[in-house]
Length: 241
Image 1 (cartoon, rainbow, N blue to C red):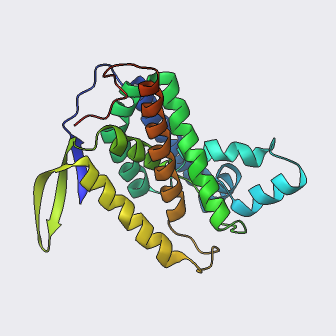
Image 2 (image 1 turned 120 degrees about the vertical axis):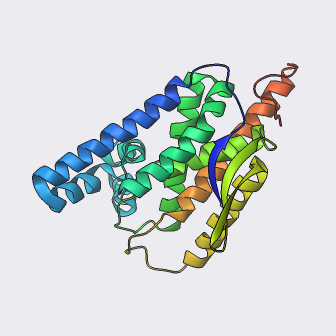
Image 3 (image 1 turned 120 degrees about the horizontal axis):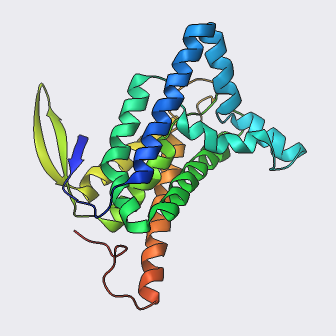
């Protein structure tokens, strides 16, 4: 099941979402330039420097503290990607779901929510495998937080999805709670299956997805409860659908 678009209009131009998409594209273009000019070794060095390496983060925090370059990689890693498929897949989900969350939260709050989701995602993966020496890169942890927020705020929004039925496929409008719930269940299955496997091999940081999604769920729910506690009527933070 691949989401293609949602039937959930926004009131304002999603400037932050557009900026995040542009930043990921610029960062990827820089990666391609490094690979062309310096070869794979140059690119790998760049990724190792600006991606999150759990072993380096835990070592730095244990000896120096949190005010280190390794801490900064919790942010910088969110804009790097390992290939065209990695990049475009992330940007598809970002473009479909982030604009509504930005519309609800407002631009500064959304940017904080998004980057915070990416940090929470990376920290979750570090907690699961603190000795891994494989760099983690990609926006998927932050985007998972967006998905978690979306399922709270818009559980019944219709998502046009490409559904594969054997050798055939069909476009179906599916409620967001089904599309995103199915996605999260797949992450849980992959995460449980990966427990006990060596972290020294490359692959998808599934627990980053899980951590980001849970962060988005909790943060969005707390925002809704806070707005209701203040006695506001129906607002952008009220779940709809």
